[in-house]
Length: 95
Image 1: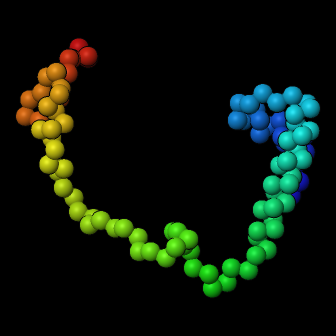
Image 2: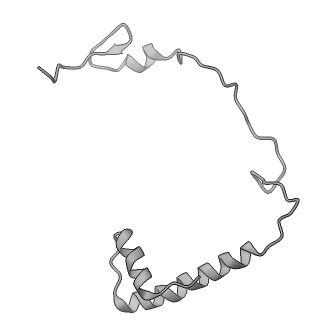
Image 3: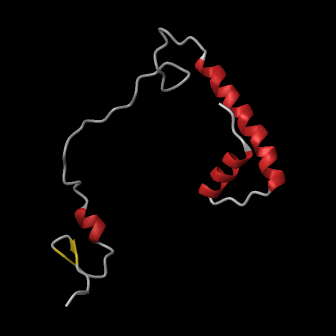
């Protein structure tokens, strides 16, 4: 895959980055080099390689998947200007 100057300018516009014509020509070469490297990576044989979460082997930390009320409603509403029964009280905004 090859990137031309028009594509560089389009990507820059989508990213809301101002790019001059000289910069676009420079970025065209850089983006083509990056895409060439990605194409090289697609040629690597990864058959039998398991996905890793780290370079050192370790078990993933997992927590119990349980639904709780959090037990912190009173702590959360403690600093609220107005609260009642662990709910925030706010001024009425709709008539």
